[in-house]
Image (cartoon, rainbow, N blue to C red):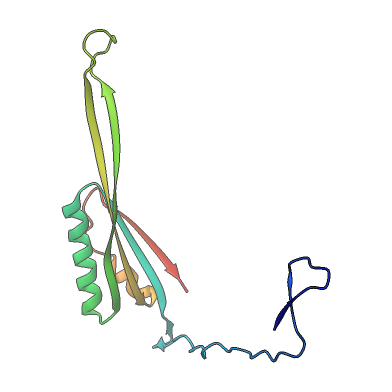
Length: 142
């Protein structure tokens, strides 16, 4: 029942005789805004970055174990792709002689933990001894 417009422009027009059925979307379930003891539950994302893999994994394990001890919903740690920063430097300071190079690289490891908890509990969780060289970023979303 699709006809071309009378001027032949190529744009389809719907014939008025055809009945169009409306499609409805599935019902949207309300999001859980459960409050425990009067505190709002937040989505909290903790991002850990470091050059040392063992340090990042150690801090992740400590955070996850503490969160599970407090019966919080935890997802992660999600291992993000390692960023490799490469640097190629010429060995000879004067530029003469054989073209020889030094190759340096730095690997940056990143882990992401997601928690569903009140913001007060997160302050208690992050009071752990974090190794030197591990950067912690906490993002609280509603």
